[in-house]
Length: 279
Image (cartoon, rainbow, N blue to C red; front, side):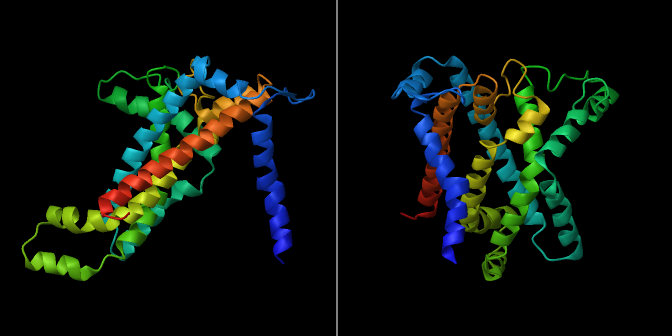
């Protein structure tokens, strides 16, 4: 029974992953015979590829913005939707609804909302006397516009995770705090936040991974433009392989992407463990 499952796993995940490592040491256009070039792809990435460094910076900024706002908003909403009342349950469904949509459909919806001429957002700004912006066509705003879309898209999913985590906190702690005269803020600071750190570790790690694999959303909204201002590592890898036909170089870029995500996830979990007193 285990062999068919392992065969599917090996075919769909293990073989492509190992092949990717192999091709990262090759010069290959996807058609001709690969040529072994050792670490040249990686040394070129580190020393000569200014575009890769720019896109890596884009991805770090995008990830930082989304992780901070998505985590804080999800925790805030979860604290208000904690009780299992009909209203809270209905609102949880409303918050979770965007998550069931496809990334492409979300990108198209927000493309319409961001439209500089007919978009809802600019219409609202103009109604209060603020001039509209070219949200996706201006290098100053495109990355932040996509970050806002990403936060809207996935915050509801994190709300559900936080609700599940917060419901595990013993209510006796809050009752004892109320007896001692603790305010709502003191209860949150001394009970909710420390007890929610394990859930926060999950939310932060998962959100970070999402921000480094947001290909569909970015490509459907800007394709990385204008002037690579909203380019992410995943869109750069795609363009390197399928537009420039540098498959070996794209493989090296994807290896770096994996290491970046693993390193960030480790550092985040390590920081949260130190805050909770775990080793």
